[in-house]
Length: 453
Ligand code: HEM
Image 1 (cartoon, rainbow, N blue to C red):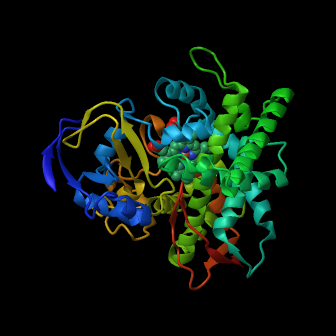
Image 2 (tube, rainbow, N blue to C red; image 1 turned 60 degrees about the vertical axis):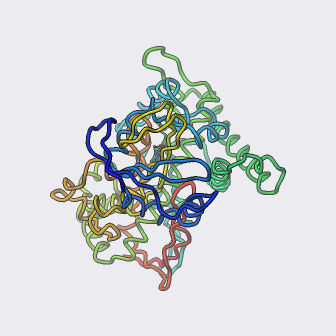
Image 3 (cartoon, protein in one colour; image 1 turned 180 degrees about the vertical axis):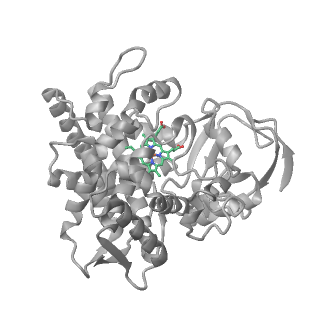
């Protein structure tokens, strides 16, 4: 590890290092491919800025929270390139992949759709939808909580976006399409050559069909809504009425379509995985589960959970935050330097890949003592203040920070409160959690047994 003086902001001494275990030609590609979570979590021990070789290219993982913030708060220098350029061809020039002025303009138009009063309205029916969805659960029944949460979240996401006019069968179809599309986008953005996805293989045909059908479903919802002209107070109505604050320009139907598909891709699996991890953790820690049940019972007194209840569910929110720390759905992201720059005391050439990883930050013992321990109390008043600034980053930071963070946390808390007020989920003995880092960090199959409370 070499100490170096930085000329980058913020001004201080940084340590820089190189990841061990580089092999000729491939560098660290295999380590990152085979065991990405372990590899990323091991890197902060080698410096605040750690060089990683990806084949012939040099990339850097920013490990110190202040350096991560510097990267994320300077989007002109650390721009969305690389995989985002590929994703743009697949998702259209929507919020999650657009850059520069185009991104700023889109964000200003769309941000009001995610203001808190709107979220309170969008999520008004989440608890009722959850009750309806779990209505068929029976004592002693085993269910895969990952799969169950994906199905539930799709229902909730569909209701948030399109409060009316979408039936159960279409929601289910959209869920299957979305799975194929998300997997396909991940494989296509990660593929080094960009040739395989053009071949007429069964997998590629499946992707094309799913993508076309998903877009068709959303397109029909947009057309129906435009025709009816009614404001349903849901996310779709808000998007259709969105205006640029200066130019007054709105989004055309194609732009709304790209944004809605992006919200589904960026928002459904991330939130569903978070819920599955939360129920797994509660099942594995009965003493925590007991406190969650006690809090929910005290706050709700048998009522259906509402947005207004959430501030009172402090411990339950701590459990969700701790789950996002241990298992951040968005486990790694990247930027590309738009020009030569100083970072962590190094001169970084233009066009260099800069990685940041919530997995690496959240499992760093310098930032979180005993990082592998599930400890929701880290987030309670008195201890939460001890967490270094920028150490917890499940939703990113800066101008590209997740636009759906409050919506995701609201949906998650409402669903946890609704389910936990009626059911406890017991892990099936012998089940081991094996998180799968794909486009999002997925929990993999998690069979659990339903027990009424
Ligand atoms: C637990 C659930 C979620 C997690 C962990 C999550 C995580 C993230 C992260 C880390 C980023 C920033 C990525 C980067 O720095 O490159 C991001 C961006 C984004 N997320 Fe989320 N997200 C979640 C839910 C949602 C939801 C519910 C929606 C929408 C309905 C959403 C829509 C987006 C969009 C559009 C962006 C791009 C924002 C921009 O670049 O301006 N996400 N998300």
